[in-house]
Length: 295
Image 1 (tube, one colour):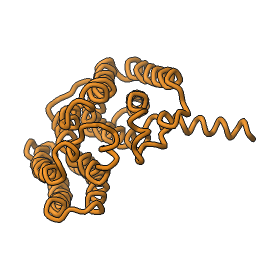
Image 2 (image 1 turned 90 degrees about the vertical axis):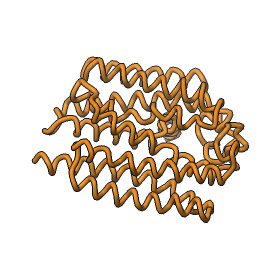
Image 3 (image 1 turned 60 degrees about the vertical axis):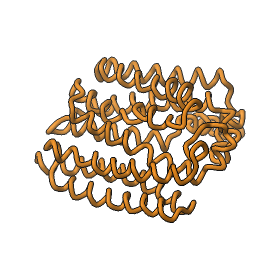
Image 4 (image 1 turned 120 degrees about the vertical axis):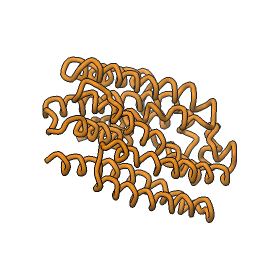
């Protein structure tokens, strides 16, 4: 029983390195991209292989992130229980784990999907694990904006997996996530500002104050609502998506306005939680609209 428990604990530690909840949202957006790339149902073999490959490379990127930020994580209440922060997994173990699952993911994408998807996913890995985590995050309070492209790529990866191409429609989906990222993340940074002050990272609420950050969230939310109208404007979607985007956007905009006018940590926490629900429902509405129109 002791050996079984130890093995279970070790699995849990490695699983935590991949930041599974964040990975799930990224993979969900990639899968939506796969379905939107074709008027019919995507080939199930490609669907499964691409999902697994993208999941593995995303997990590898997050493992590198945990490795690089292990000392920062140990100073923050939100992240102090991560296995690298607690010293439960060594640097070498993390590197081997990340390299193994990342390598398997690349092999799957190259051989079972297509080379374009593999290279795009690998570029996303480098963008997040190296450009964002190592270079941008400790250097500028605009890190989440500049580095947001890597986190916005999943729909393009999914689209490339099915179509072996990344047309304008796929980049519109990337743009939506790119504009969504700042209000999503800065809402978290607001109510976790004490944590980020301890971390030493130049996060916007620390470098520019609460009111400035609240105003930026409002501005980006306005831009987000406008950006989400693009799929309808280019005839990529129909009325189901349009009504959904306007409804979801109005709720987000109301929360951003309340956050700006009457800030509380509770409201910032609720805004952060809603932003996740918002993106999930928005992409789900795109999928429903897509198949209502074509079937």
